[in-house]
Image 1 (cartoon, helix red, strand yellow):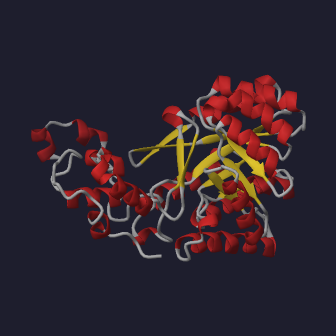
Image 2: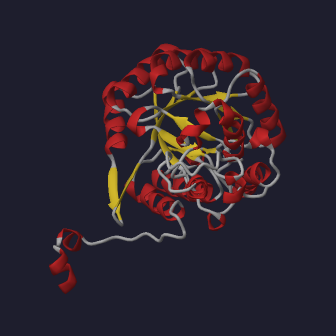
Image 3: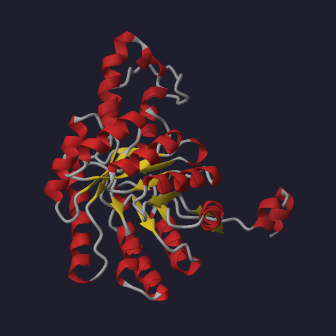
Length: 356
């Protein structure tokens, strides 16, 4: 799929060079749209009837092959997806892979509160940038809607992070969605068996939805089409995560195929962010050290193979820090290498700086 050029954009701009957008010329504004430092509606003339049709065409042109989906609300809302290239050297990647950590409704209230506070407050500074976790996935381990609702309430009372509600039982999801509706939670997941009820819950509460069809890309595309036809606009794809052996290789192949089909082939039903679940490592490894190592390995592979969000179980620093660093390195502009100025230099006066 051909990349959009500044000239493609310029042809759809009013061409007034009015500077109302904050740029000196319409061509400069076109370049700013490419860099995503401006948005289409930052051009005030598009509000006028004579330019409205052009504005709509430009909005369609600027919609990336992988749609951007927003999880949560407020300052800690997370943008995932929104990419238009396979590899960052072609342009850059804009929305880094979100790291979500799980909790479950079998935990005691005290245990749940402690884990949520830790996940929510964790920050480490590297090369002048603060690295932190992005979301909390609440799993219905008990299958009890009341207990799940209590867990969702506890999480929402202790953090402003985005939440993912995890259950294949629509009755359980409905309780959680009703409690967390103001947070715009991600519903995990709609399947070929429950999608109608999940759609109803999502529309009632304004939630994005995970479409899940493990191991079957065609079934995933068909499920997405059903969700779209019934009014769901924000979708996340779950092609399944197999943690070991040849099945893991198949998982990585499918992730690559999904991204290629969306970007290079323009397959719109697959043009959504992808979710991975490295936490499945804990289903095949009983030893916590081996499980944490396997989870970290799967996470690294899924970050490098186009997952826009991953669900993890272990927040142990030794397991997560390598992937925080990997993510930081991948999701930087290759044209602008990471730079860091030592504190002593930053605080020095111009005269003293010249002497350093």
